[in-house]
Length: 326
Figure 1: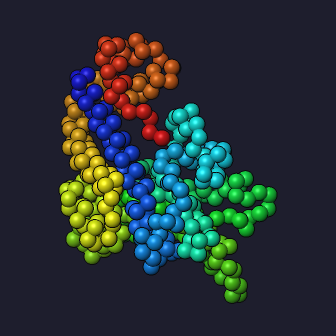
Figure 2: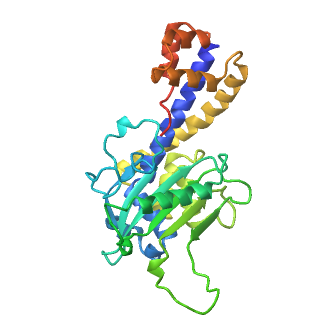
Figure 3: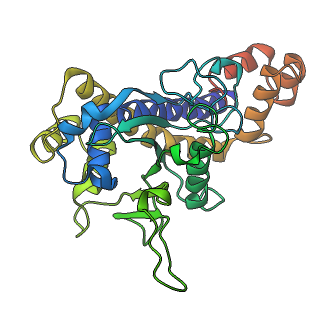
């Protein structure tokens, strides 16, 4: 039984490794440029290669906290207002997957963009509301570093772009954007667009090949993150159909995600079989015990006893249990 638990927890660890690799791949500037030309009006019609130099600095991957008071806690980072320092002291925080600044084609106007990779389309709450919250956080975090007191005119537009790999029925192969738009109730007053168009949520919901909508960014992302296509097939499509210059680094990242995704699929099936065989204590309870020991709230010996393991077995289980997702 203990071996089965350990193997199931290792599968979770591999899933976390896949998630991290996928974020690094999506955080590649050449990949981000492809996303921007399809989803952000300010880059519409541009060539991805021309967008790459407009992405400022290095995108921040999994290190900027979402929580109020922490997103702009320090100003030592190159991206003003997005805290990335001392993150090891804040384990357990929810963090943006990817955050970066981009200049518009005029080279002057600046926007803040968040990209999220999401597997669960219905995680127990409306995903769109979470995306709007992320936009709100990116706007409120600008207070202090970007504007102070009543300098609201300096607020920069934000985007939260979500790549949903397993959307619900009816959402597959769809691309939807939610934005603030005026509605004239009385009269025809016209406000400058830049004064209200400050946040947009984009949902990229992937689906299977062979359908009418499987093209553009939907096909690009499906190919990039596919767990069934080979690395060579991915490279061929990305180069020939989307003009992606496959550098050694990018090719390595694509192959790594490909290999990990295929492994996660197989391990996920095995984990389900193993979890169904575990008696007396479940995977969730094991993880809870591991977390309590790590936080110092439960002695190792007592945790091992509750898990019906020896101390050495529990230590091995801890080594194969990933840290709490942040």
